Image (tube, rainbow, N blue to C red):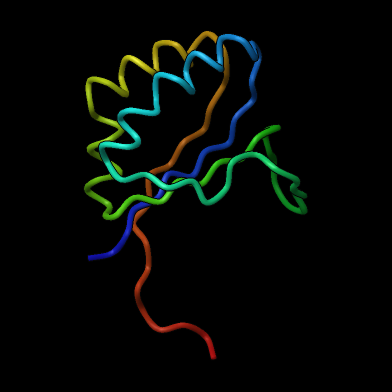
Length: 101
């Protein structure tokens, strides 16, 4: 089974409000096996547009990634995030095929 990932680009407009979102998302992330691979940090954007914060979250499966986003607990967290940030989010299935040598 391939892993699932959330890839998010975020502009935080209300840092205090965003802290409430972070606190609220902890439980659904834990329940669905989320693991942060990227959580802000330095970056360059050599092509295209970007936001000020980038996040990549790994889940044990694509279905777990979808289930987390669809969970009632995460929906509650989204309500806190909406007034504190602008987000572009994709949920994507991982790749287990051959790699370039």
